[in-house]
Length: 318
Image 1 (spheres, one colour):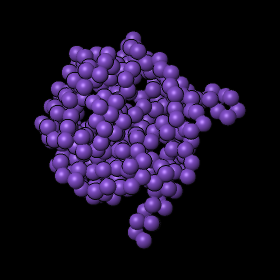
Image 2 (tube, one colour):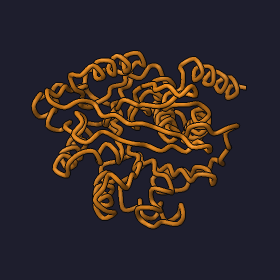
Image 3 (tube, one colour):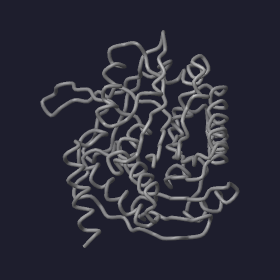
Image 4 (cartoon, helix red, strand yellow):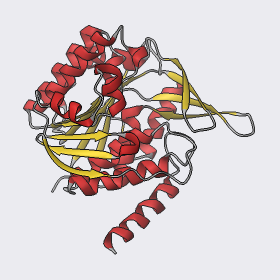
């Protein structure tokens, strides 16, 4: 029996941050990549792939090695001859909120659709049980390539893949709100699982309540709608019908919120791929996000996360 397959689409970048000793350090991160790492950590039997563009620079080589260390295949890391990986610098304020500076324009990942066409590789891809992308996956592409990505995902869905999408709305990535809404609607149209935050919908569409988000999503064929509502908790809907509400549990401390949503998405999707109920999947995903915000950086140290997962498993069994 084959392992379930999970492919995430997007951009992994070099992450620069300053240590407490005022020294510069680097790692590798990106929203859908972070989610994929946490999915693999939660459900080790998953075969995980990351579809992106990379360069021929030394950071690209180190980055794909980083993927492999985390159990992520680099089989679909498509190499550009003249574009390198993107870079971002992160600074956290006293509340753990993050502030970014980016150097990603014309990065290799922004050329993904051209790289797929040039390599003529799509026909050789295996079946993917789950395809995951985000508003950022779309936002880095030209409009022509956004359309090509939606068409690619439509083809994968037609072959039996389930599609998951997180809006992850970032205003600076879009010409204006109308531009972002156009592509949000295109993404929702092809998605089976949607993981919006209330902030996404409020900032983009003016929705002031979870019920407004649910009503909006009823025009699409969304099977699972998981609305992250901050301190109000998480609300789950199955084919438009209310399923459950998981209350918000604040973390003991909040050091870095960089990957809170990413870890939530990864663990939730991994749980669902392991046939866990939506409510339990949300509880585990929320707990994982609560752990991640207590540590610096997008990817929590493996031993810390594994110990947390074991404690949670023991508690669940008990």
